[in-house]
Image (tube, rainbow, N blue to C red):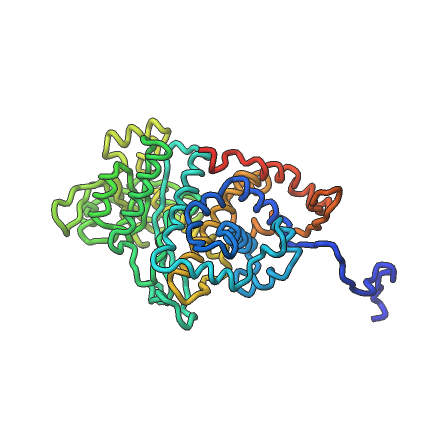
Length: 469
């Protein structure tokens, strides 16, 4: 202790006191909430589910949803007790730009989710669809690539949850069906855990709804490519995609009859395609399913891994894969795709890269799980948990849109929620009243580090509000 030099007494904290000023630790929420208000998301919510406010008592639906979205985007505490804690905080009310009396308690939030009995939770799909069209009109893609998959929510430790059933991962939980477009989850069908990927052709029905929506409200001739893994392998699914006039890329299964065209070929002489972390040798041929009626031949690509990172792999020693697609098989659809600048997607290397990038698309699953904080859903009733999850997906969607519209200079690429929260939300701020105005103050380091003045201007002037079309 003799060699330790303490700081001067003038720098030591000598006590603690209460300050009357409103201090908040999540100052960036003010930016996101202003973005939500200006884009018109809450108007869409009110039009879709506002009728569930059965009487004049209580708070409007959009007021409750705004606070739920704020809590989910914050991510600090999504429990009902968390709402009770914030319910008593005038600082939180100031951050939400509302009166303290407008804050909702955990009981009010629970009653709100209790409104979604039966299949009312499916109303949130309409909101997601409207958000999808909004992003299409904002980002103006020349062609659209959709990825279809299911995701398991592990609720194995829950004592009692309606619909919490064993999944293929040998854990009890839920298994919602997702459709992704880039970083956005644009459609969800919340399902119990035992529902497999191809359950009652619900995946095809979901894709068909989105395709019709896109062609009616965005562009009638937009090329669409649907990607899916082997869980959706089905003659009926492929036929349905072809009737919808969309391209598809589906991973196949390792059936014995698919290896027959490969007999006698020299694996070492096969052409290769280089991916981000691996390289594959490939061989093209035509195949059809051996079961079912009136099966047609489709373009099939066999791939076997030949390099992992910088290490060469002996061909044929690792699990192979088969890819089924109609890319390059329909002159009309192929012509549209070429005209849209996607002609490269018709070539085998691009098809292989797209099929093997399914693993990258599943990063959206990791992202939404990290965004949630916990896979455990809070309620016992299925409809309440479904509505909770839909709002979580909606909050995740808004966060990604905020990153692209407002904060692309600060965080230019896709990232996980933790980085976004640390970079844009988790900073201290002081909210004061001065000159008849409410002002949020931050340190100079934060102000200049992320250019809050520019972010604030963008939040107040979004490039394309939802109500603009």
